[in-house]
Amino acid sequence: MTEGERHDGHGDDDGVRSQSRRLSDQRRKVQPEQRQSLWTRPWEETPEHLVRDMRRDVVVDCGWGRLVFAQTFDEPTDIISLLGAEEEGRRDIAMYVADSHVLISQAPDELFIDPSLTYRLELHRYRPRRNLVPGVFVRAMNELADADEINRIYTAQGMVTADPELMWSNQRTRTFTYLVAQDEHTGQIIGTVTGIDHVFAFDDPDNGASLWSLAVDPQSTVPGVGEALVRVLAERYIGRTRNHLDLSVIHDNDPAIRLYKKLGFRRVPVFSVKRKNPINEPLFAAEPEAEFSELNPYARIIADEARRRGIAVETTDVESDEMRLTHGGRRIVTRESLSELTTAVAMSRCDDKLATRRIFERAGLSVARGRLAGDTDADRAFLAEVGEVVVKPARGEQGRGITVGVTEPDALARAVEHAHTFCPQVLLEECVSGEDLRIIVIGHEVIAAAVRRPAMVYGTGRHTVAQLIETHSRRRSAATGGESRIPLDDTTEETVRLSGYTLDSVLAEGEALRVRRTANLHTGGTIHDVTAILHPSLAEAATSASEAIDIPVTGLDMIVTAPDQPHYVLVEANERPGLANHEPQPTAAAFIDLLFPATRATPRAWTPAPPSSSA
Image 1 (cartoon, rainbow, N blue to C red):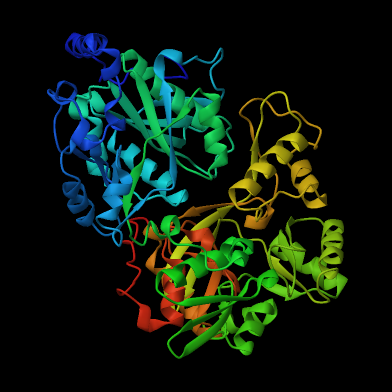
Image 2: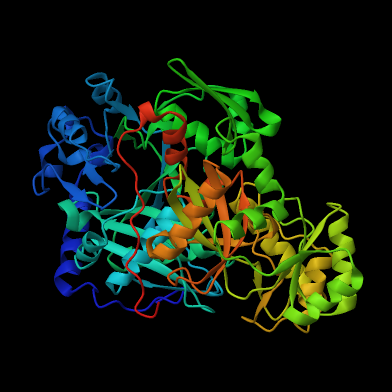
């Protein structure tokens, strides 16, 4: 057992080991000129002795799609028929296609060669680590709830999810191995990988196995998760005396390729074929403009959704992420999720937090107690009355100029002065405790909801708080395309100080420390989808707020007791919410539905969760 692995109750028995030895003995009896692997042989040239005992026409259902083992098929047309029957929203893969060009030539409008590279680890060459990957515990999926966590990670990485019941059923066979990685400090599942044993799948004469769906939670701060998962899977197949472990990786995934090469994987001439469907479109459709790559993630998600629907996309000002979308006779200019459908009046209402408060109050919505800063004595009296305040510019975005948790008069004066550098008017509001909730409303319908949490770091027993922040900031920046960083500024230093530490303090291993008071993504906050459990009262408040402002697309910020409870305080409305932050909820699809209703495929409606019994 390595990398924290534990036995999962599905170990190999003597019969399996005997079968593996028998296959190895058979391979040794093959003459040198006959040792060419099955996956490199054209259909018509496969020697009968190699496939005599192999099962034919083998397809396994992985949940996210079917895996078609092409080397088990005698007729290429059967593979074409199978891929043509692919279900909507799934991603079928025909792997080990020896004559991929021949297969494509028979259905060029339907199929394409996947632009991925295949890597192989010869398991007898594998070298284990000297030490375990720290902070990571790898185990087999051992309950149905693990499948939900696997899907959560798939979703966060933009991957196709799988039916949890099917994954659980697969795990109970010898063909599939689902591994999960846990954060040793929190117990949270932070990574997953799937293995398929080809011997159990189709009596593979090459005695191989393959690795699929390696994914790590982008919110995780633990390094080496992917390596730990790959190593444990490889070592499991070594225990089964398999010859090799194959995987397919997209050609430009440089970080993954570096990891695989580090572990000893080498390129092999294996190809896979997929069907031309909306999920695969980025793999076979050329980019319309070079400038598309310069768009930020919030504009790119909209451009991609528009292109999938046949809507022409033109970047009119790439520096500001401005685009012109055209379909038929309709033309609309957008800047991320802000479009010409949002009026100047609605935009000004969101920009002015004082105006937003008045509109919400008149609509009968709950807001925190507040006042416009100005009179020092009155400001201090308000602070004394409510005990703790949030100080923020009346105009601004992305958390700039905001100070949370002010409790002392001197700190209040400093916070007001800081906010004044961003806007002449400064708002004081009662600091309400609870979860920071963002609800996306498009066309006055709730599309997504997420809880936002402030940036946290975890001690190693060796690094200072400043070093932990810098390391975590780099990871957050990489995971968000540069959109999220933790600034080492006065606010961060003050937050650390209020917790009893300095930037030079060394936290004990596993100790958690919050380093920002606000949960804004741009300052290192993390986002956790809660759409499925959103309380109907919160959804109703959000739609009422959007109607009161008369804005078609908005992100409503609330402080709530919990996302499945009805109690809330509205904080503000954002006229240009980041839709990419809420994947896989269909935010971009709902936005394009609003702009171009003629392209809308099916009605989209948020279904409220049943109220909690404690509500």
